[in-house]
Length: 115
Length: 115
Image (cartoon, rainbow over all chains, first blue to last red; front, side, top):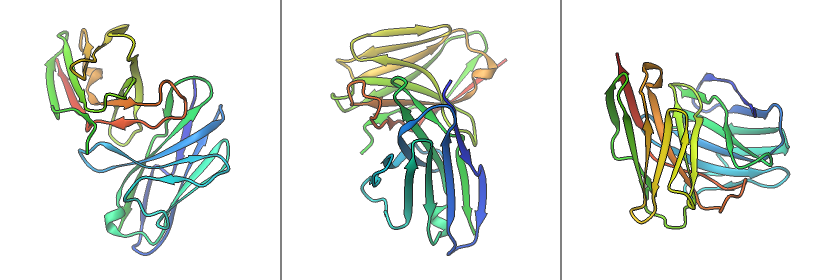
């Protein structure tokens, strides 16, 4: 089946630094990648949608200059949290949509803690 | 505004009995619904889905029922097993079966199956 590899699984960074999260589709081409954020006991909230080779579409309220998304190839998308602050601490999950059929494959998530 | 709602944050069921997880939605344009299972610090895993042209879909111990007039769907797990203990997310899409559409998630229901 389709697999999405997400790294790192956990990261702790200092306030003001930047963190990059990678999502790779291992055995299929991810035409579209979705980035979600989940706070404790909350739903998965869509942050942005990225299509390979084009600029990401951000949801209302998500700062595009703070959460940089790059989808340079059909197998790799990255989310960079710039100038991280403690309130950015959250669980970030990517999801890939492929042409294989109607379905979404999720990465394993990244727990970001900003101290 | 939460377009997909799971009003029960938790459910506790004895092993062998039926688990019924409920989900309501407000957007009548949703035409595809999915259930995901999620363990802590992991990405969601797809369980079962249903198209709006159906009212029931069954896969082993899992059955999803859709009542479009009530904008309600439910996931039945029979018989429940301790390994089913996880958070279950209901999700919906309005892209008419497109592989590129976004998902709208509920807040999840924590299912605990006790021996």
